[in-house]
Amino acid sequence: MKLYDENMPAPNPRRVRIFLAEKGITIPLVNVSLAKAEHKAPDFLTKNSLGQIPVLELDDGSTISETVSICRYLEALHPTPALFGTTPKEIGLIDMWIRRVELQLMSQIGNVWINSHKYTEKYAEKYGIKRFPDFGEESAKRAVGRLHWLDGDIAGRDFIAGDTYSMADIAALTVIDFAGFIGIPIPERCDNLKAWHERVSARPSAQA
Amino acid sequence: MKLYDENMPAPNPRRVRIFLAEKGITIPLVNVSLAKAEHKAPDFLTKNSLGQIPVLELDDGSTISETVSICRYLEALHPTPALFGTTPKEIGLIDMWIRRVELQLMSQIGNVWINSHKYTEKYAEKYGIKRFPDFGEESAKRAVGRLHWLDGDIAGRDFIAGDTYSMADIAALTVIDFAGFIGIPIPERCDNLKAWHERVSARPSAQA
Image (tube, rainbow over all chains, first blue to last red; front, top):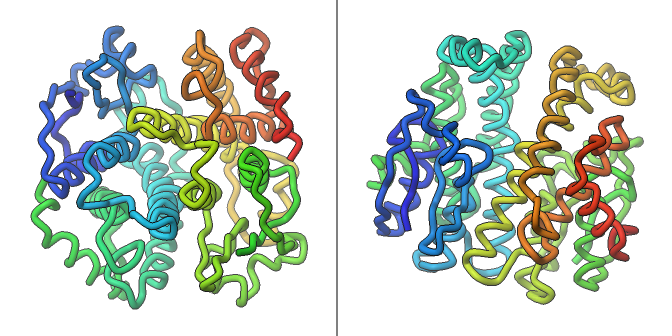
């Protein structure tokens, strides 16, 4: 098994690294240079037709992409410590929170990053991707609204999906750290979210 | 257990209905009227702080939202027929395809629906949601591109994630039917996708 990836602060590669650290699993890494557009090379497109990293290549040569799916595959092989839940209710709630973090929060942060952040301007030009700066700016406001919603919802519990650390915390940590990196920090009065952020950032896996 | 939902052609409610039909499970339905804004009422917000349907209420009073998470919970209770896979590889690939369908295709269709479709204009006005029509129109073009990509990727296999029907087919069917409903049909030369669409639409569950 090997993981095609690049060692970047971006949320996706970091998710898998944190997951591996929590599980105590090591997988050989093959570096794919985004700067050299290696993820768009014909050979790489046979591994992931979307031309995205990370990609996990199994021993039979088949491939799995999408960070959460890679982690889910690894969880099926290495069930403990369980990060996707073990009871039906835990499984449902952790999945719900992974989705909420992605569909409510990550989607807005992604809209900002792609449409109105200065770092992606040249990339968009190079690949002919149309940008919508007004939409990006509105998405930044919406993202702040979602951070407030998340802060309110997690009141009274230690982790995103309940009383134990899970994949939902990994999803949220990587998104929230990336949001901070692009200029959308945890808002001032979001004390629940700040306490949660300290709690999960203190785990050794957060350094991965 | 009960399901708060509304009997609509929208992709989300329909997903759970198809899943239940494939599993042969019946759950009492509590109708939530979107027209009467019952999903935004204070009592309903205690069930889902996002004010969205469907929501599954468990016998202990706790709730799970997000269609795929509701189905994942039900799969844990009723493992056969398996719609999320049984081997680690199947589990990984089906999850990857659910995500690809949502993140690559549904996201674009949603952008069109929210930003440039005439049906949502009044709703946006009523709730003060800013629309970005140019972005919506660009998303429609991107959605067509993603349909071509999907058509190419599924060449040689009967179902979205492999040789057996899975949750990924339910996700894709509901999204593609909704896309057709809002004016983005399967493009002319997408023969793989058309054959797949006939195949999954012929299953009794597609009427759910």
